[in-house]
Length: 226
Image 1: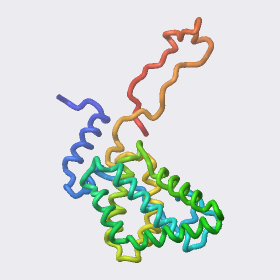
Image 2 (image 1 turned 135 degrees about the horizontal axis):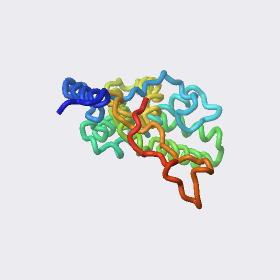
Image 3 (image 1 turned 120 degrees about the horizontal axis):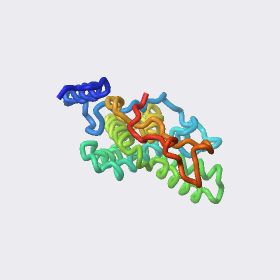
């Protein structure tokens, strides 16, 4: 059967390209070409990284980054088991053993922050911080991107020598946060999707007794994205 439109030819060519990709292109098994969530290294006081910590020292900000990364990897271990190839559970457990002292130190530093800033209510304040930090990594619509990124960060963390985990936290926390935003496979960007939702005309002349006249109705069909 002949291909009758440029759009159809584009779709067929796109799927042909998928079939020709080498196996390593699908290394994480969640994307053919993963979305780019990359972000600049952070110090910890930038907006959008987690629970704000007013007046935190540089040491406390670093501890916060480490604890945020731990929380994100823990959530991934729970949420990403649908893809065993990411090894989010086994990698997380190994990271806890390999970098246990750094996590313990980070927790102690964070306790010091809340003792200094919340006084007698420091334990409640720290518990609330911990809960909010974990909840901030929970996602549904962006799960594939989050899990793919968490798998990559976990593998990098495993390769860090003891005492150097903060480097991964500083270099990849922005990326980790970016992955919580839904994003599509970049190789499948050609697919046909509605870019706008068609709406019926609102002009008074198009309505009679609360019903839309036939001549003013819109046809709901496929709309190609730009």
